[in-house]
Each structure stands twice: as structure tokens, then as C-alpha cells.
Length: 371
Length: 118
Image (cartoon, rainbow over all chains, first blue to last red; front, side, top):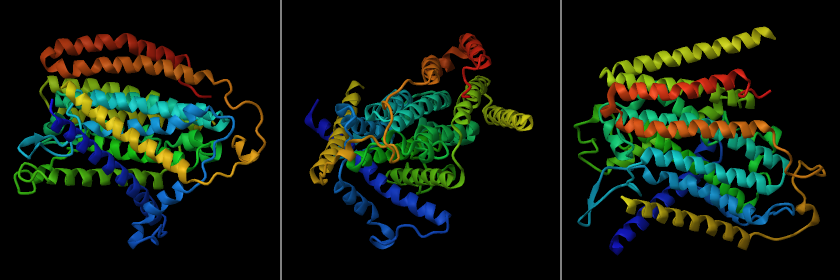
């Protein structure tokens, strides 16, 4: 082991961490502007051109705010919890490939912090760790609302974790590998969202619940729980929770892009032209950026469109609809691959999705008629 | 391959450093004007009643136990997903048989009302 290797790790992790931090800062602006646009408002546009300095102003404001620490909190965990929340949110992005291998300074550099064989398993594992920070924040605050918010959030995250992990199983099945780079290469001709449409949609729904976004933002239901698990936090500690949430959004969008939308690969109709990643490697990160931005726009769009779900419906949807549906999809995909009939997978997957929608509709109608 | 985990450790260190710097910055530059009222827990302006952490509904515990069950099942899916092209139909039926007892448990729990939040 030589020092250049360590230098490479350091540079790559610094780049990814800074990318996520800057992405977080501009995602807040992006969200506010897009929400404003959808609600026929203007949104923040005063600080700098079109409000580009708004995140900087927010950061400076938060640094100079007083940090309140109520008397009843458990101090060590109260201080640690924001840090514990941020770490998995950032580190989950370590296995995402941002482009193909690059020859630089006479060595092959992989455009991912860590080139793990166990990509999908790693993502599933780190995504589960993310719940610790929320639970610890809720518990150490020693506040009723914070406690309830933390509990609700953890129950919700672990429930949707199951469907999310089964989506990773689907991807692993279709690619025949857990390695993120190989998954991207397996989608060279056909994106997995086309091959397994219902799996991709369930993935998008489960990610919304996983990062506590609308319509699944129960832990932050202002009307019931003030702010949920971060009720007692203020100043920079609150900013860290905010940061963790938005970085999780970026990271999980990047994971969705990698696993279901072809990752850094160009769309199939551009293969063979000069716009292909094989010809110009630097197009890889650009395609990734476009896909991640599109998915983030989708998340904001959902927030602007849908009202918040009721908590019992949320849990019932996770356990009674998504989990059985995903189990069926895993076996459907396996049958399609074993029978070597690739057309079978989207057909059966759409059929399973249609049955699920029909059953949900039936159950809801029956409930409505009984009233 | 093991070295790749050292890369992840580097990333954890970098992230932890950023987070610690943020917390320290906040505590360095923020004003400090302590007041007895500021020590009270936040309850929408009311005087708080009773302890902050109370007894927890048993539902959350139930969900946690169920999560462990299914998560372990899903972890067994992953190595199967890697190897199943070699295993073929034998592996497929083995996985189906493995799933049946868990599914029976799932249906039992559903019928018993373990998934209801009323």
C-alpha cells in the first residue's frame, strides 16, 4: 500500500462529500423555487441572480443563531445525534459510480469512492443505520413530541426498508451481480425501469418514505408533532438534521438512477454516437447529474401535489400492499429469467401491479361503503 | 477488495469532521443568552406536564420484531439472487419452499390484527 492510494481515497471522498454538501445547499433553493413555481409564486430570488446566494445567506444566518439546549435533555446523545444522522446519509453514496473507469496520471481511477462487490447489500445496510440518529434524537430530547416523532419515523423507515431491500434484490436478480458498476453495465441496452416497471415505481415510493418526504412526512407532521424528532434542536444542530434529510434525498436519487435508470450510461438511443459514455468518459457524471436532478424534481413535484397520508394508512400500505407485491415481483422476475423470456418480466410485473391496485381499490371502496 | 472498506472509513472520517465543524461553528458564533424559560421542554407554549419519555405503545415493538424477521429473510434472498442462474429451477423451488413458512406467519399475523393501527 502506498501513500498515493490513501491520497486517492481522500480526494475522492472529499469530492463526493463536497458535492453532496453543495448539492444540499442548492437543493433547498431548487425545492423552494420549484414549489413556488407550482404554487404560482416567485420564491426566493433576492439574494444574488435568481436567488443563487440564498443558501449562503441561510447558512450564515444559522451559524449566528442561538443554540438552545433545554434542561431535560440527555446531553451527550443530544449533541451526538445530529452527527450520527449525517454520517450514514453521506456515506451511503460511497458505492455509487459517477462514471466509467478513467486513466489519469498513469493509473486507472474508478469514479466511485469504494468499488465494493457488495454494492446493493452495502446500500441496504447503511440505509438501515440512518434510523439510529432519528431514534437517538427523539429519545435524548426527553420531549413528548420529539419522542413520538422519533418512534413514528423509525417505525415508518423500517417498514419501508423491507420493500426497498426487496427492490435491491430485484436489481441483483436482473443484473446477476451486487456490484453497482456491473449493475449499470447490465442496463446498457435496457433500463431496469423498463424491464421491471412496477419494481421501479415501488422503489420510488419506498424511497419517499425512507427519506421522510411528503406524502410520507409523518415524523414532521407539524399539526400533530410540532417538528417531530428535531423539535428541541436549533441553530447548527437543526441545520445538520436538515442537511441529513436533503443529502439523503440526493443520495437515494443517485441510487435510484444507478439501479433503475441506467446510472452514468447514456440512454439507449445515443449508444454508438459521440454522446456515448464509451467515447467521452466525462459525459458520465453529466448524465448522472441530469438523472438525479430529474428524480429530485419528481420528489418536489410529489410534495407539491399530494397531501400527507394518515399514519395507519401509511403503515398498512407498507406492510399489506408493498411487501406482498414485492415478494411476488421477486418470484416473477426469477421465473422470467429462468424461462429466458425477458418479455415475460414486464408483462407479469405490470399484471401484478394491476392486481395490487385493484385490490387496494376494492378494500378502500368497501371501507367507504361500510361508513 | 478489503482496502475498499478503508476508502469508506476515510469517507466516514471526512463526513464526521464536517459535521463536528458545523456543530463547533454553531456553538462558537451563536449568542448565548440563557433564561430559565429556555430550559423548559417545548410544548407549543404550554407548561409541560409529566415526564417527556413515557410508556411506548406496544405496536412499535411489534413492528420492530416483524422487521427483523423479514429483513433476515430478505438478506437470504441476496446470495440466492447472485447464484440463482447456476442453481436454476432447483434454486427457485428451494426459495419458494423457504418462503412458505414465513408467508404462513405473515398471513397469521395479518389475520390476528398485528398490522392494524386502530
